[in-house]
Length: 609
Image (tube, rainbow, N blue to C red; front, side, top):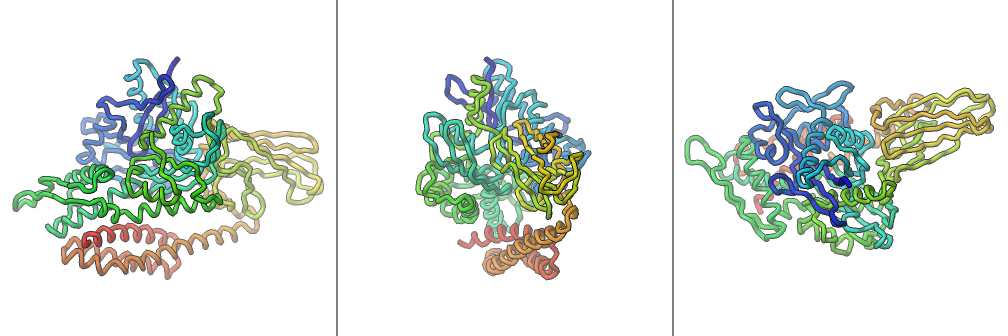
């Protein structure tokens, strides 16, 4: 029987696994490594290179090397996450037909699904090389925050790679399955899944028993991960080098990449050792003297000090999700960790303090998702109708109703396939048609949701509104189809439409002007958002002003440091002007600049300790 492979497509690294003799096995690549870097590049000969080879040449070919492709799947060019990521990567992201994303490498434009398909094909080939036979079926994992459009884009990429996707399962459920939770051998359990990967953080609270897996609460941060921990240590070393030698290593891409590699290794070593020595010989040449070397001993306590606020940020997100679900941390039965960052002792301690129990061991955190996917694939291959787990609706699905509100029929986290129905009446007497607008989103305000589609259901007899009843039924399938059926209960006349969830329109097309109260509610929502961003910006200004005196002392007159201090003060002034004027977009931009400025100053002031 042909094997089903389990694939965890990561932001930084990917992993592929199978089940052999009932035991999950993570498969190695050509060089024996079990982590496959999610990196693709085009070299100067126009050849496509993938994985470890692509990562090695990244520093000299940065603008033609694509990383973090998973973050771009299924998004449109105008999405805020695309703008934020484009500021962090060296390659260019542009807009294609219908506002679809294109990645530019060597002046050629590539669809994101095409590049992700190449990464999946590399994993498929590794599995085939190990097994000595073709592989065509897979189970994939995806973050809870992935929208239906992103999940379908993932399916499309797999299909381009020659893989049939049997199922996409949510990351936290895959992690729990990898630890044997939710099988017939275990009683019902309440499980907390803490997933800190290279680029993202996710937390989920699950209720799991044999065949039934419910997500009680979840939260995520798409820009909080191991790379942020690396950056703190990197900034500490860069500013320390600048203080000693008056040279900014960030201006030399080769030096910076060498230091970045050394930092990543040191971070991993500090999970085992109390101190490490970071040594990068001949890191840079001034052209007028001998090349300079970087040599620094880093204690684990210093690393924890530099990153304490990042750890605390994850814990606060966990507490918020638990509070929303009305669950006390100490009532959780098991804590499962995912991602290499979960090895960090400070994170292990923080989780133990929060939940009153040590996180489960026995499964390598970086491999848990692929193992869970492989176990699900094995179950499906033995019993095609296996229902060990289900795909989940990542967002609420509902209808636009009066007042610009959304009436939910299917809630986020619902196991798919799923059906739900509700009986509606007309808004006024003698109404003979209903305009059914199907929306997806996590807000009760239509203006914050996406329109999936709409149709007009007409032809029923005119009557008073209390005598007109129309049942609307939602049927959400695992393949991303949503079938909406409207039935006139008096005449039993039925009309049905199916929407592809990947064809979502932009939320800006959800116009509240269809109802008299729509515009007012949209303004109220915007005012609430404006207030939150303004309060956050004001808090950041206060934090930065508190750090500036020590930061100026740390740079000790270096030109690089003084320039950084000038930019910090400039960021404060721009933010203050935006707050005074009440400009929503400007305040959001200023808040983001202030957050980066605060992180930079923490690295500078840490060099004094």
